[in-house]
Image (cartoon, rainbow, N blue to C red; front, side, top):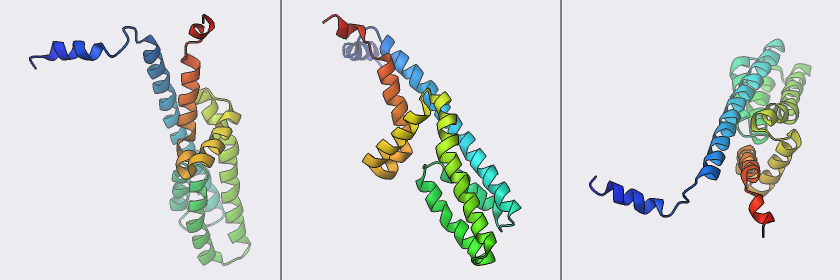
Length: 177
């Protein structure tokens, strides 16, 4: 392109000469979002394996498939767990009716989801994204209340973004005024 240099110079006029702050923000966000994705995959595997093991021990048909669905359901916190309960209930009901095995499967599923949402997620993600476990739970409740399912889905990444911006925001400029 013939005017490449002129176009680059024109664009540079709109950006500050020192991009240290934005570079730091990008580097920190890149690291934390990467950690978030890795932890989400670890969470999927934990829920998948634990659900599959419990379902198999209880003798539920399609244990591997239902366990996999449980693992995938954690992509959308809380809502996914409710949605995946339907196929589990249907399979268990057609296999046993409302006998004690049906209730054992349902209780095992609920316990796994409760432990995941209230213990595993806050502990696993707090170290990865450098947020306190309580901050993660508050973010899920806050953004979930505002934006529903989408707020729950994006709660941790949004909390990471806000935390990163607050951490790198220059504080010394405000103190000189």
